[in-house]
Length: 302
Image (cartoon, rainbow, N blue to C red; front, side):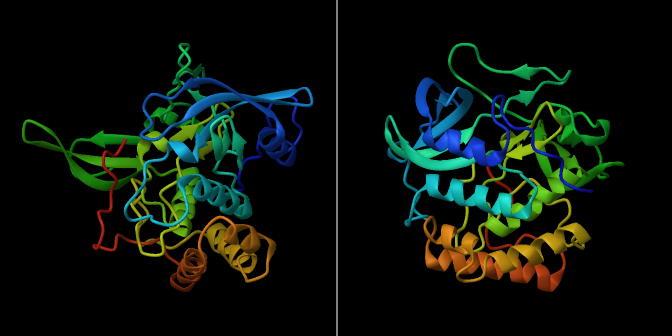
């Protein structure tokens, strides 16, 4: 199934123009996102008569991570966007690195998360919250991308992840939808070594697209994959995924434009690890499985 066409922001005709708007436009802070552990500011950016809402994450507002001593979260977020664009799946909102009111940071297009009836949600007090809400492809409610179910079977249209305690000595099976958009995202996460794929990082948009956000904890040279999308673990990759990975391997070759841009954002060792992960996926032809050396599911999971 081909990836759906990206719908640009009003007044912007393509992704390149949107990137230019984000990078060159006047950035105005309008609020702060309350739930974020690092500084995340909701902004508008305006340039040549076009305007779009965006998220600005200044490097100065990042909390240091002991196991990510090199670089910063903002640059990894941009690197994740570049990999996403190279796949052609467009799973990460347009993201740039630029200077802002509080110094260098990541600026990313704000994605409205559609509500259960197809409406969109935003906090009117100048703060914003997102979550797995909206309409999925094929009529599956996007609010049902993740669920807890009774019993030991996931049921038709669902993939099992793990059993979870739900209180009073009871357990339930955590499942996610058997959704091609989620499956593509699981492949992207394997490539970028996402250490924090939570439910709240899945944003179905009103146009039917699915976006993943918050990619600062990525690109570690060691296996750090932690995700709620383990439902395809050990299963063969789709033909589409194998083709995309083969093309990505070529774009990651030394001297290729993508590799050159990534080298400005992540370390040489981290870039080599990206190449190794892509090669491993192509060699095995299967979705990765938990290593057993690192917690497989992020906490908290949402």
